[in-house]
Length: 299
Length: 299
Image (cartoon, rainbow over the protein chains, first blue to last red):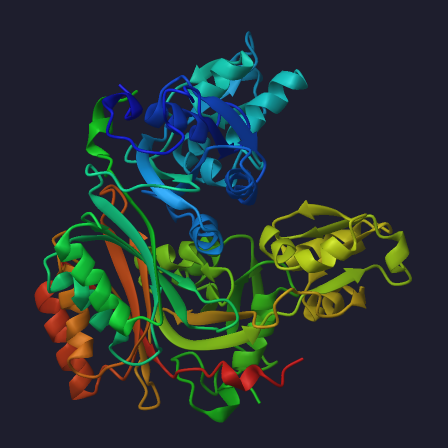
């Protein structure tokens, strides 16, 4: 059951007169982002694949799409910093989140057996996450590309019959390719967290997680004092990420996620307290928290 | 004047019987890492170019080299997470740091004019940092490669006369190529911080900066309490970076840099206080702090 059908999911565009919201995502059709979008919003959506992360943000800004889905963090590779930077540059609101278990598969043209595969195409991060497989198959050449699903598309379109791609199952489905080996990733604890962004958002009562970005003066103890705003109120910080402040080397923006709804007195007080100390503060969104633990049973 | 010649730089191998220490770095000859190594240690060094970051760590571990130089943070692109992970996986000690201003140049074969250039090869990060240049030269195709200096090497070795590379000046010098345009980076506030690592280290009296890594229980307020160890003693934290704990999704290691020498009572107490709360704590190194401000006059 997707989160949308549970009715906990809010958004101006998600109404009866717009049964098929338009979702921009980075990558080719069949990308992990497409899987995540369907998990969050169900099958009744219009998919707008884009080449870059910038384009998915622009697509929502221009009104071409209702939402975009941006990967923000992977449990192994860490934060996707480009999207942290884009959150700051644009004025979109986080209205939801979803976790997807990343399963890497070896995908080739139908009827191509493993023995015929000489080269394997995929995104460098996907290749890096399957090194155990490559150690067992030293004969295979690893070739870095820009996209996992895009590598499957290329193999199918160009009828390359001596190569394979590493991608999600959705990519095999979309392009009519064949899965030679399932789950070849080194570490099964491989999850990506995605954020759903829209131009406007109202904060629902079901929202129980908030994302903010702030900066502080570069003096001893300033970050500590900022975190006090949460710690002194027993508010649970689930993530703290620093990003360089462009043009001011070795000063940082801090991105923080905490559990709570900005309409609760506790959280309002914490943000007001933080505002006294921060040189910059913005709420990026307040949304229903997703549970990554629910993924255990996923294929 | 390189830092080595200032005599503030310690290391077992940096003695009279070893006038030319062996330095492993990632990239081809002429890489920014090579420039940084020379800035830190002077011209009298033996350079060991390696393909990957893993290899530079292995090279020191095996005794093939005396030091390796690892880029750890760029003022625009942020932290180089692979090297944070490798610091944890290996047992090397940080014995020095250096900042290098990153200047991107358009480099081609001698006698190739700008008008003849159709494609530009470089590392994706370097391409991304020169987008203003590409907007002014929409006719140029951008091709991502694994290395800045390696792209110059390829152009020279294969005598490619209708392409250029984006790299540092050192690469043009090493391969006998020609610099068509200097300083084409979008943002001049582009610095990379490198760490010098060795197998063993004694902490000198001149050391005034310390790098540590720690993890905490996943409970509200734990990070805040850990930072208290420093804030309550007026110890200046210059960097805080979180990295995922592999196999335990959404738990983190924190890497922190602070100003101080681990032999000072104040710092010893802070580390002992942190140790009471952290589930893991390791000192990565204590070394003389480099000044990035000295770079203003650099070409």
